[in-house]
Length: 330
Image 1 (tube, one colour):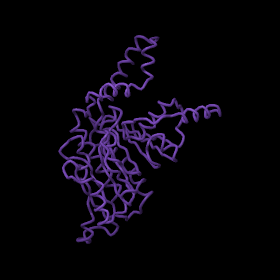
Image 2: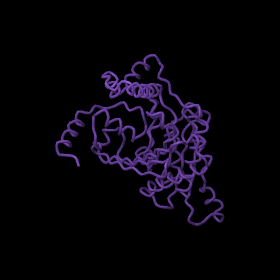
Image 3: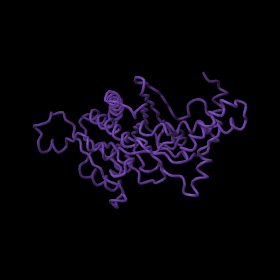
Image 4: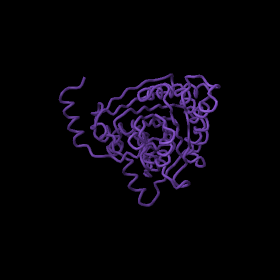
């Protein structure tokens, strides 16, 4: 239990908190960065967090932004954010992929049930560019979704009477279509009238370890490109008129993140040899990311980077996400 003095100091620390440049789409990472930047040991005011483990390789963390204070702290709207971390995905076999997809099904189904009933029509949207591997997750997943809307219209006898109408689209990217994704989806929503959208997109992370091994589910929509500084128009209930569940997977980090993580590993190794070195101890506690980014950005050296195994990782994630969605909505 925390004393009243501890809570008072925490509130005082949060009152002085300054907005952060998170450079990540993940609510869990933002919450952790905010706590570190403001020396908060317990939970951030306005946020609830719970963790659940599945087997030896999967950890699910549910972050709930409760009010305006929590919203302002991590820069995410009030709502539910679920992070599923999957270890050893590079070497995952069929059993591990199936286990991960079942976790996605469970969490996604829970979010869907908060917003629509079992028979409500759903539109699945795969954002991204099929020809750029780190950005190809959305279009690849769309090819695996079990579509039923057209069958219910033209061949209803081949389906169970309790089948949900499901449709899907991959709208491409602004650079090849000349049309904002929000504009495309508004037209589709107005015409086919889904009651909920599930939008799949690639995200940016502040951790190398999360690349294509983390899934974030959120029922607050998505701002495509926000994590890499290429913000597009918001896709949410406010802009599209229906609830939006975003399913995102980090596939890239920027060079400053890699440099900061590498420096952390270097410092940890050096500290094993020099525990009393005050400079190394101080450097370990500081936010090295911002320092490194300031050096790299003016010279255009802060590249967006993806691992060499990205092809295999995307294929594994595509299977996990597609199966998870299919079992959650059908």
